[in-house]
Image (cartoon, rainbow, N blue to C red):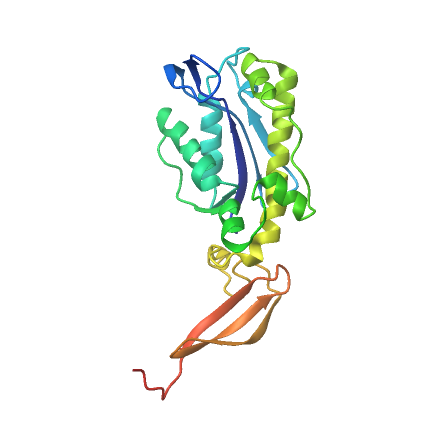
Length: 250
């Protein structure tokens, strides 16, 4: 079976010196960002896992050594066939890779990525494509209130209540991400073919359900193919292309 992972990361901000508060140039760059936490779940599983810096041996209050946290994330992604994240292609995956190489890790096993932010922008015309707004407009949930940047600063200072809220916030984001993904899945025309990964070509290539129905034919200029629709997720797919004999192609 294809192993499909949904995940989300949270990071600490960069630390720098500036002269003022508004649109200032950096005087001196003090410290680059690090990873604070990540959460993940397997598609369809009821269990969500959440890890933060404070969960690992050697953590000291106020410490930002993310080496053990990053290694754990590497292990999760290394076991995935498909990885789903919101703005994952431009943020979560690139940021994860940045910490992997910093800590001397090789690339995880190749996987296919699905970015729900890209799907929202390509397929729909919502006023906002933020995860919280998508959850709200689709009626499937909201993000956890954090109180703003103070939560991040609290974690960086080692406050345990802040860590607990951060993990709750991070975990809820993954649960909401899964709901948004499932809503959008039948619209994803470039969705990886999970039927191939599952080695079962008699099922829906989006969700692996065998509840598929024939729905006529589709046509190109010189061929036709049978159309199918999944009765479980609603996605459309097509069978093998058959050349139409006798047509003169100009």
